Amino acid sequence: MMCKLHDRRDVIAFFLDRGAGHTVFKMGAEGSSIAWREGGDIREIRLPAFQVPVVDTTGCGDAYCAGFIVGLGQGWSLEEAGRLGTAAAGLVAGGLGSDAGIVDLAQTVAFMRSATPLPRTPA
Image (cartoon, rainbow, N blue to C red; front, top):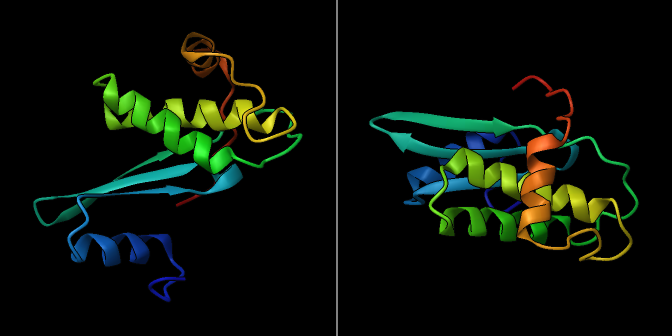
């Protein structure tokens, strides 16, 4: 809405062209996108959402961001940090309320390592 563009790749380019170092888009059941410029090319990591019984999605976006930031703080790669964000969001979606389902980092990491990814939709 901010840039009046609809295609994910166009939106990524819009923000990178204006100085953002990276973009991180949360896309619900379609997973997430982490992108940056390398040389003149845009590089993108697409991560699938995890298969979870969805009860309430309140707070899933915030949980993703928190997990992503924690992963980066641990020194993890962008992809691993995104997977932790995905796991945090998945755990929240399985409970009622904005912080339901998350117990601690160890439980979230264990879920991240064992959860089944949803099939990814084409680019």
